[in-house]
Amino acid sequence: MTSVPHSLPARCDVVIVGGGIAGLSAATVLGRARRRVAVIDAGRPRNAPAGHVHGFPSRDGIAPMELLDLCRSDLERYDVELIDGEVAHLGDGRPGNGDGRTVRLADGRLLHGRHVVIASGLRDVLPDVAGAEERWGRDLLQCPYCHGWEVADRPLAVLGTAQSSVQQAILVRSFSRDVTLILAEEMELSAEDARSLAAMGVQVVSGTAVRLQTADDALSAVVLADGRLVPCRAVFCEPGASVDPRLAGTPGCRRDADGCIETDAEGRTGADRVWAVGNVTDPSSQVVAAAGDAYRLAVALNAELLEEDIAAAVRAAESRAAGEPAAAAAPVSAAEPAAASR
Image (cartoon, rainbow, N blue to C red; front, side):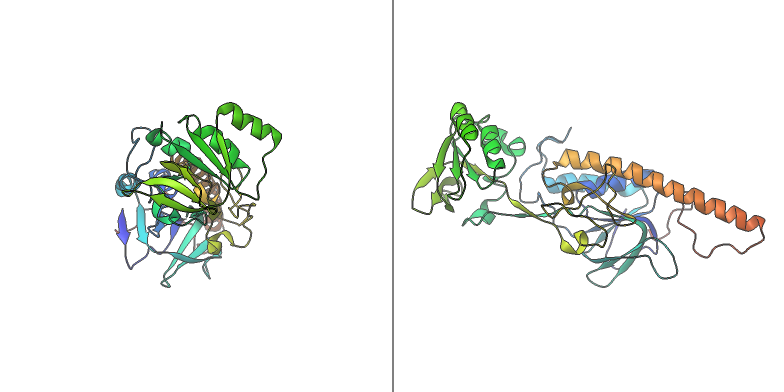
């Protein structure tokens, strides 16, 4: 495996857009299947602000970038190239090749792959609260499963900005007896939700959060618009999700209500030869789940590549039998020698 600053492989079996856990997991499976793979990494993983990754077997508590470094190390023995760059456009097949997809980087470089996997993740859209960006991943948190243990038994708050916030507050209650749901003024609780929150001992405060107050570089309270304080040592919220429109808007790709890319069970999108996996398809997918989904996608994708290889081999055999010249651009085969670009 190499990180390529300038030159690019001429052709790949698969181009993976995104060097996070989903992209690297798919690359590992495909590399082990002796496929030529290029991974384009913009270097901005979603979980970079977090101090640790949790729930990943044998690596619980590891720093996000350290986990990615280990994944990259695993790729060194395979025909996988890491390319630093950002994708600007996903196009149709290269002229004269007849199939596959072209991937144009922001600096103008081009790659061609028989298939493309979008694993570029998403960008969290934080609540409009002063201090949110500075505290994100530290004591402004999203997932109780990822961070609840570390803030257990402290005063905690939940920003109630969506219907799912009620369930989030009840889940957070598992980690502390002191939990306050700050309910946005435009939101109303159903009678059933109010009973559930009261039964679980979750306090409800109506108001608009405007600022995160800190002391000694640690969260101390959420400040409401009317000046009231909700003391807490961590606050949970449900951020919005923003998927790169240059990729999600690829003709044929379907998008859900969150703007994420819809796929079938194996990871196929509605666009020919374009697959997607990870947070670009599901904002709630955790690191270990994204890795598992990527494994399943890679197996399905390799099966499709094999079908293409069989069809190409049959055509070639029939052409030889008929005395016809060989096709000028046969698909890349896993049985071909490894690329010499390394």
